[in-house]
Image (tube, rainbow, N blue to C red; front, side):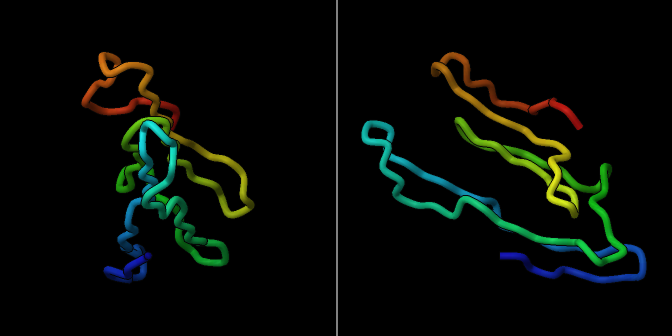
Length: 96
């Protein structure tokens, strides 16, 4: 779901709920899922700001990504958790 917060000549502010996938660890069964949100800014004068927008992935084996208006990959953040000891609470510094 995309919620319009405000519009001005120079900025559009929206709120997008995070994509979610929950699964049972032992069975792999998906119990709750809303795994993809899509919002196109094609044919608008607006772009994604590198200073005001944040891209993040939360959880284990998750990928958050941005595509440009042509559908080309621009950047992503991927999480993985090999063991419980590998899980670090903090910031993902990646490309972009």
